[in-house]
Length: 263
Image (tube, rainbow, N blue to C red; front, side, top):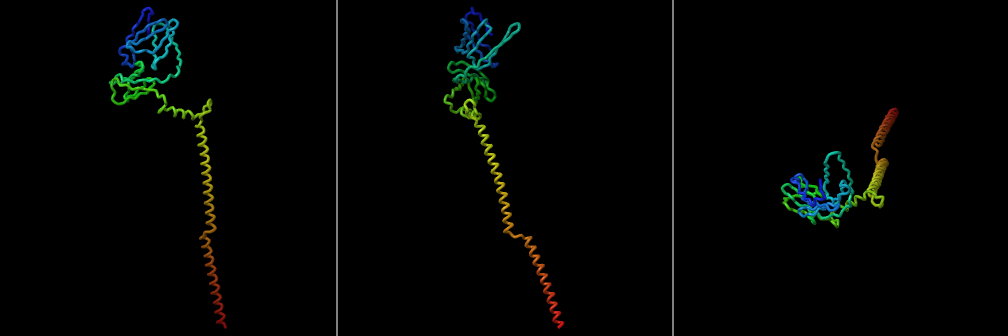
C-alpha cells in the first residue's frame, strides 16, 4: 500500500526483511510522483519495467507491463470496502531471452532474470526432484548446483526441434470450415470402414468357395469311389445265388442217379 504525499518529494521504500523466506521477491525502490505519473527506480540500479498511472481521485489505477507473477491487492481502512477491476489480454509478445540463475544452491532457490537489464522477474525454490515452474517455464536442474550458476533460455527462431510441426499435423485432424483444410480424421475413419467392408466381403467369398470345394469333392468321391456297403451286399447276393445253384445241381444229380438205378 503506497500513501505518498506529492509534496514529500522523493520517497525510498526499503525491501521487506524475511520476505524471500516466504517466497516473495522484494527489492528497495525509490518512488517519485511527477505530474500524474508514478516513477519507481530500484535502489540497486536495476530498471523496473512496471508502469502505474493513477486517474481521478486516486481511486482508479491502471497497471501495464506487469511481470508474469501474482498480483496481490490489499485493502485496509474502516467501513465497507469494495474492489472492482478488469484485465485486457495483451498481444502475445515475441519470445525474449531469459536467464535462470541459482541464487541459493543450499536451499534450491533460483531466479528468472532478464539478461539485458539484469532485472529479476521471479524466484522459486526447487522441489526434491529439482523441478520448479517459473515465469511460464518448467525447469528441472540436476547435478551439483553452485551459487551463481546461469542457464540461458534463448528463442528458437528457426523452429528446429520444437513441436510446431506435430501440432500443425494434429490440427489437420479436424476440418477447418474457414480454410477448408484438414479433416483427415474423418477421411481415415471412412477409409478404415471401407477396407473393413471389403475384408468382410472377401471372408464371405472364401467361406462360399470353401463350401463349394467340399461339395465337389464329395460328389467326385460318390462317382469314382467304391462303396464298401454296396459291394458287401452284392457279394452276399452272389454267395446266396451260388449256394442256390449248387443245391439245384445236387438235386438234379440225385434225380439222375435214381432214374439210372430204376432202369
